[in-house]
Image (cartoon, rainbow, N blue to C red):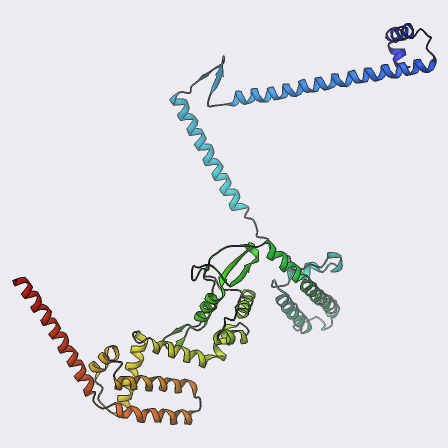
Length: 452
């Protein structure tokens, strides 16, 4: 009916045309349907008109942006369908402006990076919900340390200080702070219970979290970094913060850790903390525990690794408890290298001290030559065995009377060896004469060849 009131001519034209086509008069229902159809047609026409206007406006906006881009271009100028090349002065000016703009941007970026240094994110230690902590989460986060034991120790220290407060200043009663102290202790006990509850919850989720971290980790190396060969029995060390893990051959990494723990400087033990051969960084406690456990499953272990495990992976305890085996290992290692300076110094000092003990003359030149050139002689082999027994006795036996008894037996045997080393002198002279004859023979051969 609204269309009939607004556009009576158009409505009458449609009605007459429809009556002439059907040959019948239209009822009121037919006229209502005709009005609805006319309204729908007008609405559809307006919709398509709006769509056309919107597309035209969008094209105009795109054309404006394109024109703005062409207007702001500095390298080329478009005119009448042709391009005009920039001159040398224009190019020089453009490059200068670009350089200045780049320097300003770099300077601004450096100041921004210096002013706003991002703080590295740390994993959240407290995983209990906030409503469970009753507003004491701030207290938990401000405790010293990042682990359960460190935070617990910090809380115990604060509780102990509060239980034994300092004497009140003059003019104040001793019970003036009892109420505040009691409230503090009650809250501290609540915080302690929340610490234990949070740690129990962390232990429950530890297995799930570890599996999730393992699945996210990717390998860093494919070959063993010690032997540079393919890995047959892999031992894995995880670096969860980096989402990476290292792979080692079980035999080579077990030998590497054994050498680091039993390292020596002469007869002195110089054990060092086991380090990663790839990064040269010390292994963490959990990495060492997992690494030695994996090596043991493959059957690769030693007394040094077992001793380090029994000392709870603590270097000070390991050196203090197993000092004698480590000193014996250092002694045998230095004495096995017959060409090393440690062996030469040890033998020379022992032989010289025994000669001084028995009041005999020490032939320095002969013995220094024999230590380096005649160790397979009977006298020198005896000196080597007695030297090893002497230092072993000094390391193993702690009881002074027993030690003096054993050392006395060794001194009685060295007394027979402190006689003048006539055979060593003869051997030295004989070898010297042989070298001289060989040198003379070679020179005569060369002379004969030159004469011929």
